[in-house]
Amino acid sequence: MPTYGQWLLASDECAAYGYHHDALQLLQSRAPGRWSLKSPHHGLALDALLARYPDARIIVTHRDPVPVIGSLCSLVRSLSGTFSDADHRAYIASHWLEVAETIVTRTADARAERPEAAFMDVAYDRLVGAPLDVVRAIYTFDDMELTPDVESRMEAYLAENAQGKHGRHAYDLAEFGLHADEIRERFPDESLSHP
Image: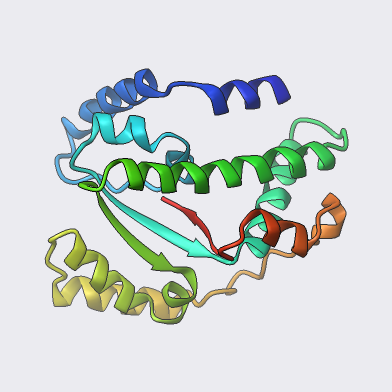
């Protein structure tokens, strides 16, 4: 829905993060501990997130934007195809390229405006190539202890669940009218970052 997409990009999400906070408190009342929240959407409103959670520790992943945009457009097409058989590929390409660019810009802006905030950068290639090294670094960054038992369970999980175990997500930029050079022009540092 184009009008909703534009409205959401222009929205002040402080009230939404207030509700988010209340919902997490309710959930945490029966399951105390730390929360680990993963969503690129947070990059659209890091100012609101940090206003509500000033002690948040944010991990920002960096990845080649070409496969990210192709995969994102393919995912959105699949999800929207659940509810409609209309061809929305042109809108998906235009809108989600804008959303991805906005996430990158707003993430950079939030970091510049809040130098006291805790950010950690993770290269996707390193995450895939040396996942336990990245996890160890995240535990250090977050001041948590990585016990031998937890590390052993992570090693077992990785051994049993190699990337591509259930197949690979195939997509083609051309089916969305996109070209790699156009994407690289929009993301000149050649890494798409999101929290």
